[in-house]
Structure formats: structure tokens, C-alpha cells
Image (tube, rainbow, N blue to C red; front, side, top):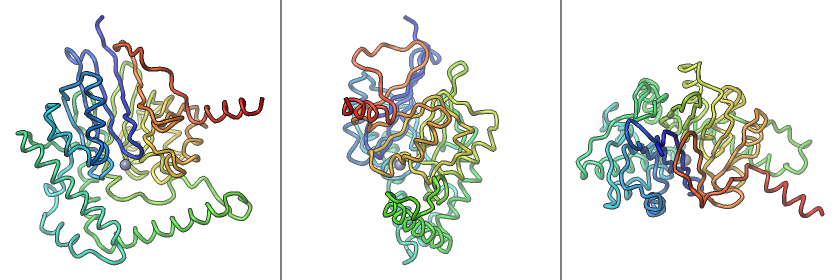
Length: 353
Ligand SMILES: [Zn+2]
């Protein structure tokens, strides 16, 4: 059987990403791309998944952005003797900004932007660890900017200029303070909403989609696109509204997708109705732990409203999710997944009898 299809495997790791994308018959045999490796402790799970699927070579490894829940697991994965790989893709901030300046600014810290500064510092550490693990295997790191092609995947974002602007934001302590302040205000509002959840008349709650900013590094996430015949697929990592609007403006002809990843584990800070209407996917996957924020019910409902079947790695129990198009090897041990929140409905029906 000549396979010509496309597969997406979203490994179930809670609020963390590791996605294997396989294009069969490209140009001969399969081309495999691993997007992210979960958290630091997740490398073994990812390696076990790859071994189970008899994957010992990855054509490309991509670190979408250096947050712990995406880049953390890649450090041990790259060091592992169990897999080998072709190319590694990740943004290297020091290629765009004076490293000294980056360290001095972040070293200074700031009381008001303490949280964001410590996240950025941790990310820099993860980026360095991944780069040196790659170097130890004789690999140079390529940067995934808009217009690049990674195997069969096209990079739609970030644009290099957009990324460099984000880097300026990372090192502008005044801007970071303002951002942290607005995130705090948003968190207070969410707290109020949670308190008044059972009496919505007390609090005029909107769906709240895309109203508060996401951390600047989330907006630096690599956004990837590919197609199989007329079916289009979009990988968003933790991109926020600003980054996804950039994608929409740069590529007005995409949309009406067959599959997409819901960004940032279903947080309502990263997507809005305009974008959901634009992307309008038939199927959407989300990597999430199933708590109240991830995925947000309002986000899932907004996707369902445009006809999307939403599947989460946590639902109805933690399971890896698989999406495929065209001719691919059969997986007799897989069964149909249940979209959010059909199992709830079924349980209610059973309970009602
Ligand atoms: Zn994340």
C-alpha cells in the first residue's frame, strides 16, 4: 500500500505540547516533524510514544517557543540516544538583540514586573540548554520565521520584525510592568466572575475571549500551516490574539480549515470570535489538563458555535489524540474520540433514565 496521507498526533501531557506531524510519501517515505517536547519531565513519555510508533528518526524538531511546557522536554529528548534527527528549529534571541543588554535588563528585574521577568529568564535558560544539546549532536539551530519551510510545514508566524519587536518588549521593564499590571487586573476580574458564577446577574460577564493580553513570549510562538489536497491544517502553540491577527492579515486566503490546534491550552486570552470565524475549523484539538481555565468553556463553546468538533487530550480521560487524512497505516488499537462535551451529555442521559 502506498501511503500518501497526513497524520497529527497530539500526545496527552496535560497543559503542555508535544505534537508529531507525519507526511507520508514526502518525497519518498515519511517525513516526521516533532513540534515541542512537553515539560522537563515529559521527555520519557514522548520517547515512549515515538518508540511505540516505531519512530527513531525525526526529520525536524521545532521548539515553538521556549516556555517550560513546550521546550522543557526537548532538552532531554535531544540528548537522548534513542532518537536521531535532521534539523532543529527555534528562535535565538541573542541573534537579534545584544545578549549583554538582554542579561543586564533581566538581571535588574523589577518589583512590578517580577513574574514576567522570571518567566523570560527561565525561557532564556531553556533556549540555551536546547541550543547546547543540539550543538553537542553537531546540529546548528535554524530560526522559524514567516516564509520559511520546514519539510512540508510552512511558517506563517512570527514575522522576523514582529519577533524583534516582541524582544524589545521583553527588555522594556516599563512595558513589562504595565503588562503585568493589566494581567493582574484581569486575574482579579476572573476571580470576581468565579465568585459570581452562579448568579450571573450580579456580574455582567461577557465571554471574555481575547480581552486580556497573553505573555509576550506566547506571541512569539511559531505558527505552522500545511495542507493535504484541499484540507488545511494550522498549528498555533501558545500564540495570542496579536500574533494570530498577524497571521490572518498576512494570509487572508487561509481559513475554513479542516483541522487546527486551539492555542494556549484553550485559554480565553489567546483567541477571539473574529479569529474563530476566520479559521472556522471542522476539527480542533487542544492540549489541556481539563481544569476550569484549560480549556475555557467559553472558548470551546465559541468553536462549537461555528460548527467545530473540539477534542481535548484530557477528555473524557487523558488520551493521545490522532487526526489523519488520506492513506495512512491503520491503527487497530485506536477508536473514535468523543468531542467536548458529548460524554457529559451521555452521562446525563444515562443518569436520567
Ligand atoms: Zn503552553
